[in-house]
Image 1 (cartoon, rainbow, N blue to C red):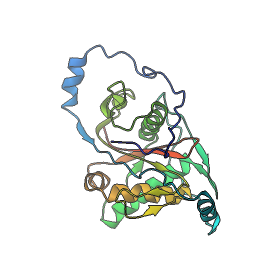
Image 2: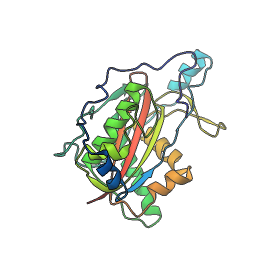
Image 3: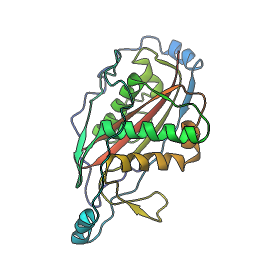
Image 4: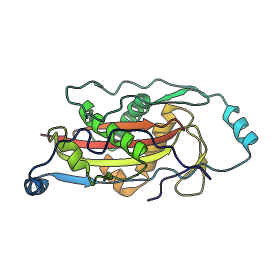
Length: 252
């Protein structure tokens, strides 16, 4: 899948941790292969929005200020400093938008809220927020941004299974949705029929959840009654590019 880029420009790569940071040697690949069969493993992905649209700069800038927006604070999703954290978790990232500063923590809280609203509409129990699962998600989002890839499997061929093994085999069943878009910049929706600008953390979260809900396999993951908890991890680049990972978990 192609990742959205600015027309005529490349996204900047950060100086993230080395490929082996946070994971020890695995001495028995055969045993891990056998263990894989004991786990429910759902891998799903989505590309949220297309490239930033080219257009008259003045009109585009006037559009940014045309209508004032109300910026809401999200209800806290839950614990952000659990005992078990992914060693590559970057913590909170921010992007200075036209109307407000986007905080990855706010976007995560809003995504968690809106996913549970979708579940409630269908009579499903809400997912508990899990700070450890969110930490794994956040580390993967940051890694995708820093090493410039968009996939469930990183350049070291590590899958979600491997990432959860690095936090002590935390879940017996898990799934993963990923997405990529831009904050406070006009982007084309995947359908190609419309454009959108996410001006606040809440609008950005709504856009992420909307796109997942419009994709059957990702909607299935969100609405599965298999999971009892989940964690959202968002990373915001200095240019406003947004990487989001939502991991679902059935705890041991």
